[in-house]
Length: 260
Length: 256
Image (cartoon, rainbow over all chains, first blue to last red; front, side, top):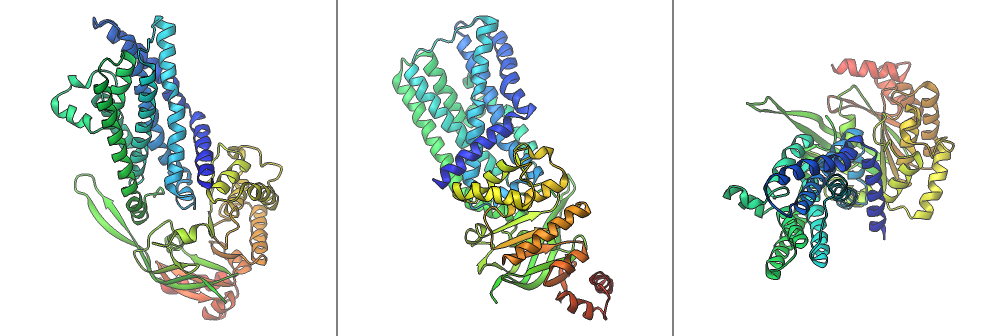
């Protein structure tokens, strides 16, 4: 109960804090709108049919990832500069629980990017978003949320080790969008980039969502991708568990919780 | 008397890196073999010039920093390794305007930190009302903290630091930048906490404040203990100085 209270109040605090920031509102609302227009126009002239779902999903996911990057990681830096990071780090609730609450709040709020992306395509282009396998989509969506949560917590933990959080979050944003195939199929990338993409769980989350939207004629392929995503998410969770104690020690040894 | 803080031969060094291409690492010693104890119920002062090691010592005691060497115990537990047994029983306030969620109201800040310290909801809400009254913010509790003056933020910090009814409160320059009335209000608040039996470890640059509040004082210089005793003992040690400020200046200048 105590843990749930901490999770709930951190989630609400995070949503409140994030939404009042103009940069977050830009990432949440303006970014998916612009992305949708750009991606839609790119695909419109590509000669491909049935590209609307691809553009909507891709632009929405780009926005989602942007929000997650600039919030889960950036918020630690903001807390560092506002002097609250040290307060929450030593609170008896445990930094791990607080971090999960923050990431959960950000991720739930950031899912709005998918809605704004769909609305943009619908209102500007009259595009439809036919979902061929709604049941599979629900499953894929839940798995994707779990995937993004685990990636965010892992990234946030690693970023507590350094004060150069802003630099790192900028470095990871675009490469992940490209390597994980958010906007175009990852199969078009060089082999080495594809291998890198395979160990990143968002690649599989994107693949699952696309399959579910387009329809799942090959169920075995869907479950293989689902299994891979579940395994990678589990691996990230194990990594978080293993790193948790060591990173807690290291941030106290390196004194990275505050600004010098 | 029960010893609640025990520091023996405590050391803390920081690694500073310089340069872009050829990175040079340098060790800076902030605390260098410090020893003292604090008894339950006393107000213990840590004085010293900027960079003397006061804040670093407090950060090690509140489990925020790891000591590089020596013994650092609070309530009988090591601050590095047994921190979970300590964190719920202490709290801390750093001077200045940081450490508050400015886009939350004063009340919501206290509520959130109450949750982080696992204060049961009923007790938490009752305590918030009491604390807002104690720090004279009862009329402003529902306003956003970003609209508060510096003094109000400082008082809110004190309320936050008392949310878990800590056995030991660490105050790092709590009156820094406050106007005279605000500083006096805070001093009377600290004196009231002493009457309630709270143990307080205080750092300050205002020596009259230390003389008024502290039972014992440690003067630090370049990370080392320069002198330790009651304000009266320190004045005697400095050759019958008239005030603590005179004693402090003589002791520190003598060490330079």
